[in-house]
Image (cartoon, rainbow, N blue to C red; front, top):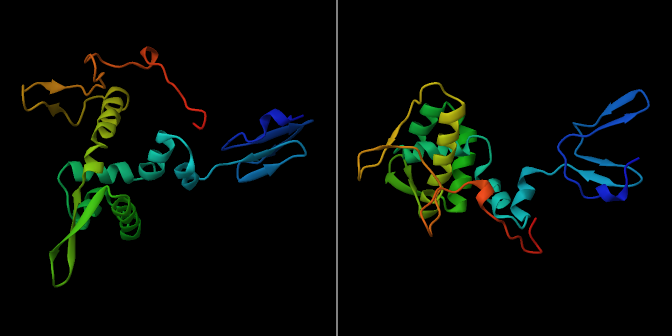
Length: 188
């Protein structure tokens, strides 16, 4: 029997076993019993949570968004360039670009009058996402490829780098077990 202690639990898949019968509720968004209500959160709801990670993921966590940002960091500015590289449908790419523009991550600049054409350029918000892409690159290089298809060189010293997150106070590499999190009362 599900108790009141589970009220408000967020799940993406629910299965209940009653006797020998199995009821799969994975396609349901909401399941209500006489004791609790289980709600499968939708992606858009993350923007309302009191959590910096959730709110960030609401912006960049949609499928293809980080790949689009990768193309900006590689120097692409035009819709057709990005579409050609990623092989995305125009409607999907257009929707993602509009989301990024509305969020202030990219800005659109007209480069041609007839027909009207625009380029997209990085903003400070986009530049602040570069370390996120570096973290994904580091993880992917470590766990998903045999030979890295991309290496980064630090222009100042000429060394190939392995991107790290370091403490801005002492310069030491940061590891999860060496950090302490302080949550506010309203944190999600």
